[in-house]
Image (cartoon, helix red, strand yellow):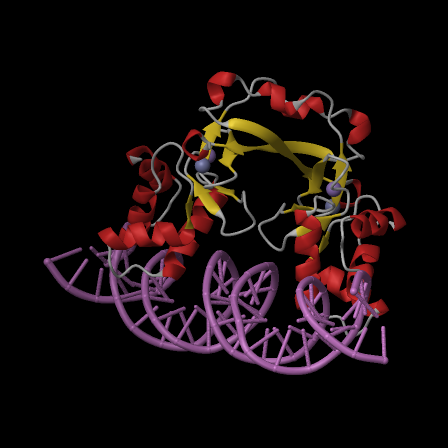
Length: 137
Length: 137
DNA sequence: ATCCTACGATGGACAGAGTACAAGTCAAGA
DNA sequence: TCTTGACTTGTACTCTGTCCATCGTAGGAT
Ligand SMILES: [Mn+2]
Ligand SMILES: [Mn+2]
Ligand SMILES: [Zn+2]
Ligand SMILES: [Zn+2]
């Protein structure tokens, strides 16, 4: 977290109170907040922060590779502070809870050349779906 | 296609001209149209078809399992007529083209029990990203 | 062939998520 | 402290999708 802010400063980021608060809110494992959730949390620390700034800052963090966008449900995008630690997601089909997971083998290797249609494949994103313990009947 | 309409009738679907046209538009491989693209194509055959009906019909086809929703970019959902043939997707990061692919191994098996957090995992969705031949520098 | 009616279609209002932009503010270097 | 370009803000706007009252019709009943 302090790590994150250091890295950002190192990249020539102008450090404003708004950006600091957004970076602080996005902290922890299994964190996947929507932009409006980030805004709500940020508002507790800095009441006057605007929605536009939250969107701007999140967009910059994504561009810098510090945060990744996750869209598991076709609704609002979610922002994941573990951009630097590649992982996949396990989503509960009932309540929407998202957990970070790290599968065994490399899914990229599972795609045969014949199935690549001449693409230069560089990345793979895996979403597991199921029912979480709390939602089990 | 005629197949599809047969199956639908068998399920007690009321066959209207609007539904027929939507089902006809959604036909082929590597087809991943947005609702508004479906509407535009449907309008060529049936000029008075409404956007609401297209959304309704697509929703029903999804519920019936004949069509699957694909959201690769956090923008409009795309509708895939290959609902009955499970497959994954390869997306060009530049132009957005989507191809159907069938990887080797079973990605579900790659998720160790220890990484399942007590979930009953039932499905996995894989999206490969890369650059397509047409977009290569 | 005609009638009935429950189910489907319509369009317009509405809501949620995100972007654009002009004007005001401020971080940080000189 | 001053200056200035980068950042922030609020609002208007776009895009995607849903809701709902009303109208129309597919298809079974007669
Ligand atoms: Mn995550
Ligand atoms: Mn497909
Ligand atoms: Zn759950
Ligand atoms: Zn391309």
